Image 1 (cartoon, rainbow, N blue to C red):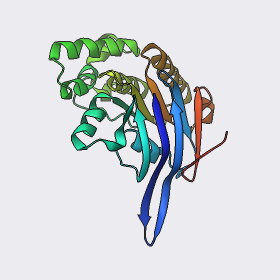
Image 2: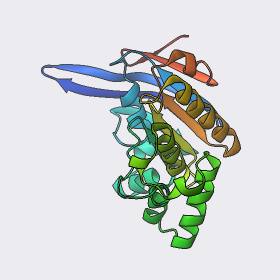
Image 3: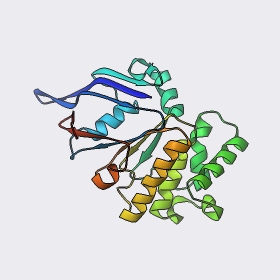
Image 4: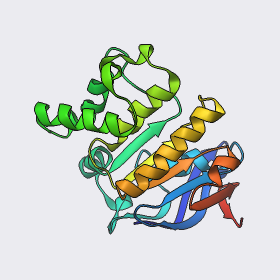
Length: 223
């Protein structure tokens, strides 16, 4: 369960303050697929960065499975990001000189998982997201955009996180492939009982998620 209460993030801009996130409260249950939508500059990516502990809020709380991550110190935050969160980015962020399997294995290596177990789980995850055969041993430049995003999703699942955060995961894909990736994320939310929060500009795809949070000027607005 993800619970956000009165979350704020304020930046200095010259002599004035900018409220990038302004008093947001929301809940997302285990296994639920939620989307965050809004115009450019509405605070979507800032909110996602706060949820992923990539940035610290000015005030408010972010409770993930009963733990307020805003109270964690640096070492605990690193562990949280490594083991409790999975990230999926628009640009895939795969390591180009590693194979698909090796990319999925990487977070498990940082988490101290032994090599044989890392490879077994990586290949199982790639099968689960629809990448099989010799494609598992190809490097990212030899994979299509949709295939690279499948690798990125498998990598996000590698350490069995309770929460996956995706920032415009279909932004570089054609509409048909993008719809397939969203269906894949939706199915994974159920099969893995993983909470997924995705930022998207595509209202048609966002409408397929179980919850839609609309942002405007850092605030949640009613649908």
